[in-house]
Image (cartoon, rainbow, N blue to C red):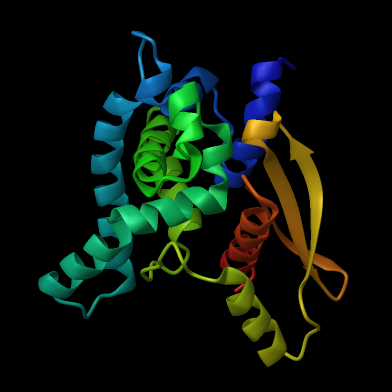
Length: 223
């Protein structure tokens, strides 16, 4: 296993897709600031925008048979806007894997909504090119869960606690299970468990964001 492969495995696990052509994922994570005249993720971002629109449109069409065109359009717009995409990218831990130059790094590029949203579209395009439409749709399902609009400020830990309490379960317990990367670009991995059962794991550039990502996965995969 190469270092490059090992570095991308946690993100592929979060996405639910193991790339046959990992170079596509690496390219999707290459911000223009880090390209130095080489290829960056902007072309993939262009394609990913179209793939995202199709996957979300198809999911909404199937889930809301009584909803009219105007309502579907509004719901889709809420899902694919920058804030929602940035939220999905944070849940997957995309920021920790981005390739940025030093200036972008210092300016907080790993957590900028615009950078994260663009990268999320590029990653979706990479999945589409590697595995086809169904693979991309599966990633969208993981990103959007019930296809209800979410915001970057959504407190998934609070939502998970409310759900578990309503089910008569104990309060969710969070634990940091991994930490890697240089001091200026740390990546944390956390897990959340209830009554001794692990419900989700997540990654992020801080412990709090990793815990939020774990809670989001628990909400999405253990409905």
